[in-house]
Image (tube, rainbow, N blue to C red):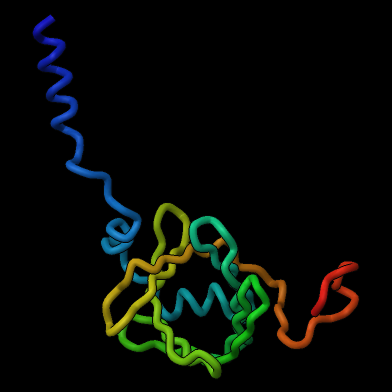
Length: 150
């Protein structure tokens, strides 16, 4: 009986002191390169999630650094993107500069916010990359349900 307590103690002692957070796991992963990201996104739309909920859609123009972003609430902004060191930085016409690192973990792509060159706890997950375009502008009346307003 005494040996079962010893084995139980040793089993618990062998466990890590704490499970790594997603941010900690991602910090150990290499960044996705400019070439890899461009190959994945050129002419395509990236769908982002935060905490499992769709946050927005980002459409990359073909053979260009132009991009269009639309939140799930319909807010739109257009801009350009370029590399600043290891970070992908987006200069938005309406909202200014946003920078991110792109990393892969267990087959999923994550996007980590960067402020003053340092990663933040702001993490988005790429839900999918598709060929479905997005467009911004006034709501089309044909898309409205009875009782909804634009």
